[in-house]
Length: 260
Ligand code: SAH
Image (cartoon, rainbow, N blue to C red; front, side):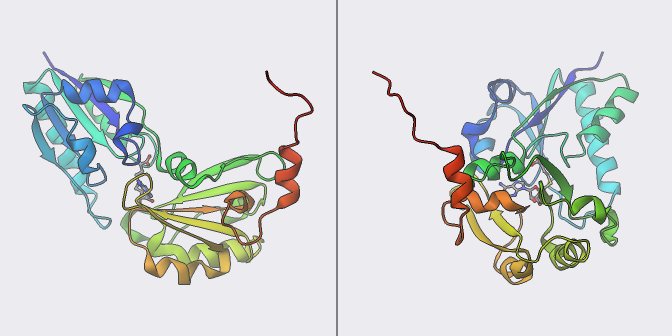
């Protein structure tokens, strides 16, 4: 009889952004398998009697490491009732949660997925940049800036040229120059506003605002984990040098009534 594996999203770092379900599962875990991106403050929420398994990966990790992680999860599920696989952000957004779930299902292990706040929404909230906004962005795309084995970034660049779509790049630090070149080549303006956020929602958070053409320069002072937001919505940040007053004004009319 197998135990159950909970694929739990830890959110972007601030423990207050854990879901109640995630907190409950951490407090009651017998074994926790965790990644590099899980913040120390969240690690403190884990049942002190649980065994901890650090499977922190480096950006250039070999695909075989995922096989090792899958195997660790299976072994733990065979010997424990309550196993938590804790991942930064959301397990199903660039988190390989799907692969772990599929592997465990193959061996008859029950899996429950607990969503987490993904870096895109965590960073956006922390910086005060809405990812969609009436009149500026009608859609948002979450994109990986890093492909398996560090191969070139073969994205459908033409589909990313629509200026009414906000682009959020995860793991984009190393390939920033290629991202900028390809987006401009496919029609994005070099003046498109961008925001970079490192360690979003943590005390160590850093961020910068700029334009697409300045990104390669800007990125040099940042280190992972950092997220890149590209699109008109970045101008809604209060510190953006040229905010679009007309759009803000149109959306915040002075009410003609008062609440008593
Ligand atoms: N499953 C995670 C993403 C894992 S990929 C999620 O849903 O958020 C790792 C990438 O996420 C990092 O390279 C970085 O681009 C982004 N990221 C995660 N946490 C972050 C944070 N606190 N601040 C900025 N970027 C973060």
